[in-house]
Figure 1 (cartoon, rainbow, N blue to C red):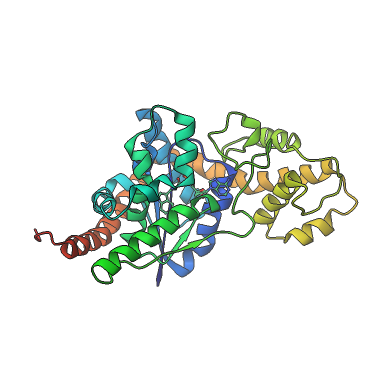
Figure 2: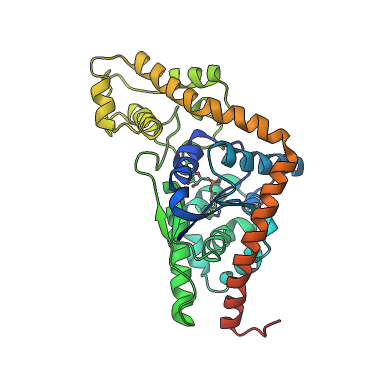
Length: 328
Ligand code: TYM
């Protein structure tokens, strides 16, 4: 079986963008792959985190994976810091990555601009740790949103460089980016990515938002004066809502356009809100139940770490040997 690896940072509450861009596709792909789904806590601390909140969010994301339909019996769910090979491999790969490459990462440039003075070295090295995550598992496919594409390309470059320098060691992974949900946009500014770190909460939908809040946020979403539900670059707000509906229902944008010919924005928005609520409500219910079942979740992440450690350590030994370290 081919291998999938992906992960989410426990650095804030998750948004509809995280769900549609990543998790929903993992659920679809899981049956055909040997999958590793990770909660990347080591990545979260590249920016400041409150310890109690970090703990809470790490468990919540694990619960969310399961609540969304990822089967912990068939897939490996684990917490990144429970597999020390990730940190070790990140150091090694750091020595095969150039400062220039990391300096060109747009996510680093954006984030460091916002942070001003307090940019950690970890934030700069972030994509190397991500490369380590992926390369340790002989990963074929990495299902992520479009914003991670550049990081994935760097992981491929690092893999190829190492393979050329020594001998074939790493599989060179491919990105899997969903067609409609590649980049869910901010509801208040549809030229920007929907993100939990934006200031205006009306711009994003959180996965745990109540139906009332979801309906309110969608009804306030910025649209245009065209007044026609059409999938067009000139109507970025409507285009975004069509993408959301398409990702949830599986209808194509054309089918959605047809369904809403002659229909006003208010009705369309109300249907988009209903689609989101119908998708998220059952998941929210399951998350709330799972969160209280601490022993079950602990069992899942411990089993996951055991499997992940086994696979990752094997690859780590291989890397160390190629480099010329004395076997322990
Ligand atoms: P993170 O935690 O920022 O986001 C998790 C996933 O959600 C996707 N995503 C979106 N997709 C569509 N529209 C949006 N508005 C949107 N916002 C977020 C992201 O593309 C991502 O797939 N570096 C990664 C985590 C990571 C990782 C990895 C991923 C660490 N190691 C190895 C894959 C493989 C990140 O920060 O994702």
